[in-house]
Image (tube, rainbow, N blue to C red; front, top):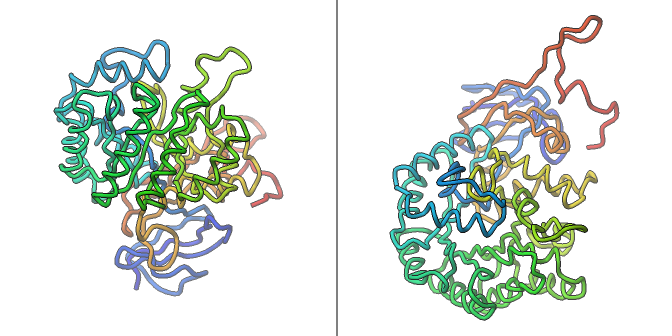
Length: 432
């Protein structure tokens, strides 16, 4: 007797027509034609069942604040930072909580059940930390929310930046963040990396640093981050987010840099939507798009995962909470359209992100948490192409959200009555 059985499911590794038996909030069986009963049955009808999506890089304190107190006219990163600085003194705990909870509602419908959010600690009031710590507790039954103490205005550059970050960690924010390229000098940036890694080592915490989010090829703080990771014994516990300067670095230097990053076991978090929107703003043509070297980093064995970063905030006026939208863009910008490439891209929003976040019990295997998503697509490549509806979202073996299949009706003589992209318009012979 199972609590729930998902029948006729396709799996991300290409297996088709499998049943998934769930008991006690965990996956208990993955077999073809499970001969058992269950309290509830979900018929996947030959569609893809995946572990839930993970977003390892987000800014929940800013989400859904678009237009407050004004729009980002230039669309640049620096105006976005300045605009956030204007909004920050106006923030209230109640408004922050309300916006964050609304975003979490959206995330659940998209099958996004694991999120790592940076929390701006530059305002000594730390209202952002107070609010998101409360949100973390409220959403715990359905979303695992990790929080990063993020000195948005610079660890050394912001007044009280050092003390405010320490206080946020004392309050329970569990990851050490930084932004070395935004310090006043390259030297201050390097000093901040060392200081923040020392704090993480002393407190036994992970590190997730905004690093070299710039077009400047001489912004090389990732090199310092890799060195300090090794020095402080933090291998595998450090993430370098963005790394857009690598897009502009010369190949010889990168041939030295990537092995250093691999030695330090750095987790790499590009943010495709935001990176290509904000970088290259000072270029005419040829125009850089800014996303880091995804293919080369993956080939070197580094763990690469993709973040959404922003949804309707001072930096990005778009976004939907859909990690498949993020991955869809990554395919295009990284020029990774091959079958195996697409599998790697899908991993970057699921298993790789789970590894970056240090998630336990994540995955699609016996004994894993029964957190699953049924998509209106037959396989991984189709999911990335169509960004399909999430037919069922399951948390701990219980359905917590569902969306009707997307089907278009036709009223044309002699033509079909309906069209479903995921079923009716695919090549006769699919490569999966």
